[in-house]
Amino acid sequence: MLPRLEIDLPALESNTRRVVETCRLRGIQVWGVTKGVRGCPRVGLAMLRGGVEGLADSRLPNLIRLRQALGDPSLMLLRPPSPAQAQEAVGTARVSLNSEILTLTALGLAAAARKVEHEVILMVDLGDRREGVLPGDVLELARAARRERSLRLAGIGANFACFGGVLPTAESLVELVELAGRVRMATGASLDTVSGGNSSSLPLVIRAAMPAGVNQLRIGEGILLGRDPSTGEPLPGTRQDVFRLEAELIEVQRKPSAPCGPVARNAFGRQPVHIDRGDRLRALAAIGVQEIGAGTLCPASGGVEVLGASSDHLVLDVTAMEPAPRPGGRLQFLPDYGAVLALMTATDVCRQYRE
Ligand SMILES: *Cc1c(COP(=O)(O)O)cnc(C)c1O
Image 1: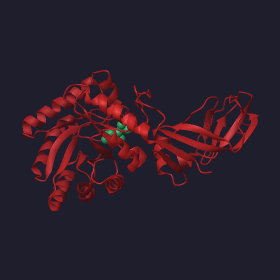
Image 2: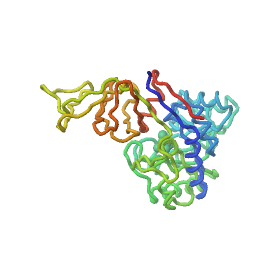
Image 3: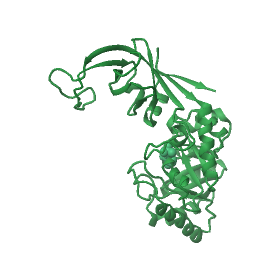
Image 4: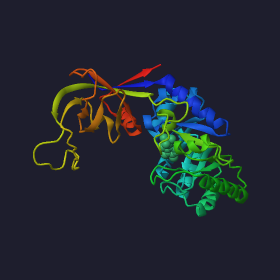
């Protein structure tokens, strides 16, 4: 049996509704981020039903998939396009996030050629050190956007907690709101959107600490997994089990927990660390790094511990399981964001949708 990933669409829709409602009370619109599920249209549809403003993804092929399946939803390209992607970007997305003058020029030309208006949100790096210009350079970028007649300078935005793990704070978001004010003054653009980050900004909204003026968030993990990615804490009123993975056991045997023999690097070039806990009941499930990538799995039932994975084997301690499992039995796991991404991308996984 192939590993089976079940995706609970009503639970996903309910998570979406909860996040959208929480944000709406603070005047914040939510875009649903689908990059964690490779732009899966069924997930996108559940997010739209849950009330998101539009769908956002970092990759053009994912956005094209969404567009082909769902008609004409509002689409946002999250990862700044390269100049060479300008034509495809304006042909696919209504709005894109940007940080380079060269790309704005290319987007302007491409939009003019297509006789469409393309919206741009200018990204500012407020400390996470991934995409975005430094605050001092945003005016120059805004002027470049204003020079392109086929571009609409829709707003400015920032991203947090993705590369540097830098958390959004009330202070950094006040800075974003102030920068928006300065750009409005200097360029005359209405600059409707102040896009205040991803799921890691949700705790600020929940604590009523989000500065006024921030009116958009781009939310993936908070909807898909019902968690604040920066702490892993569940978000109030959401479910954490939208994605459930089932894998088959291929071996269940009592073995010493410590390895025997000289220890060197394992299949992934790392030196494993073993704790000697005496003899334990161990199980192997038929799933591995090929399906879960760099992600991790959390057992969905008690008495199971995940010890690790090689390419094709998940190694488990099942000593505490009652009754003891048998080969051919199946165990369920809750995948984290990285594992969901890999499971949605892997070929030999059976994906089933609960409608
Ligand atoms: C991935 C991403 C998001 C969504 O992040 P989550 O933590 O899943 O909410 C938002 N904005 C940008 C620019 C992203 O790359």
